Length: 219
Image (cartoon, rainbow, N blue to C red; front, side, top):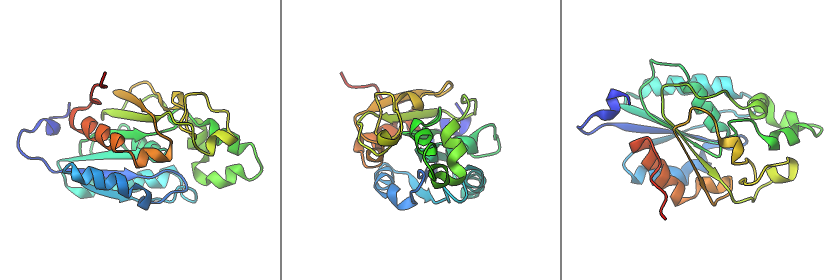
């Protein structure tokens, strides 16, 4: 564990939230409110998910992380936003320490994205994020602990355009959220968009940011 995260005196801890494709930061406000209630400074980072894609968002996120000046800067990304968070923190040592929580992330590529790409104009709708959504990312070898929360309530348009493996959240299958190198994984009964409004997700996120593991499931 990074030494900064082992301080015993009060720390300044900041969270940056990242939205998914076709979304804006306003969709993260319910989650942001709950995380602020847990004592964190929280901000959302808007990025051009279609016209810009992953690389400009990664560069902008790194710049923002360096500018904050907190003891720890945590990242919480929903769907495509999780890929932005992971790529921003991968093998970059000069960033402030912190942890990452991924919500419904297509880490191994998205069957829904492949289904969309197979129809006329589908790839155009995903813009510069298409490759990331189709291919996913490699095993996690970065310095930060990563926790993943997946949904298993199958309500969403993704199931109509892609052959999703059950269980899934209507957009991303649970299997697509698993990746070698992550520290912990939890599946809960919610849909892809529901991950942003769930008090359980917020509680699990706080627990991971504090301890590097999700709280044990209640029997």
